[in-house]
Image (cartoon, rainbow, N blue to C red; front, side, top):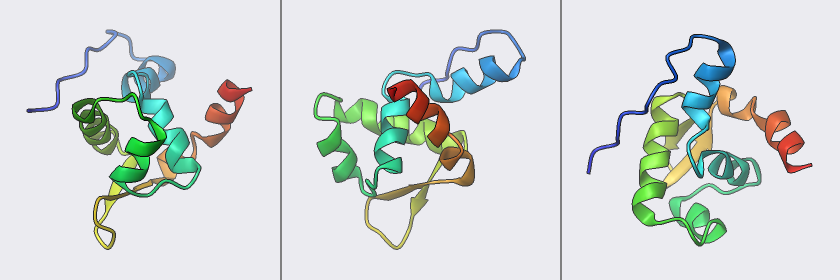
Length: 97
């Protein structure tokens, strides 16, 4: 199943572009779990027990395409945040408060 094409807002400001990248359902929770130490697909699935596996796969592909995460070839099923993804930490922490 191919990753669906995100719907754009038709706006070009920074907030609209950011929400297009990380505003999909589950995306920020995946970022949160990676910030908290999750490294594998199985870690993410365990931390988000209600996420359907096809949605988790889709979100990981979308976050990868957006440059927020990358695959870790040395770890089977491994993911890590890119510098862009790590820059979301203050946003995630503020939203959790």
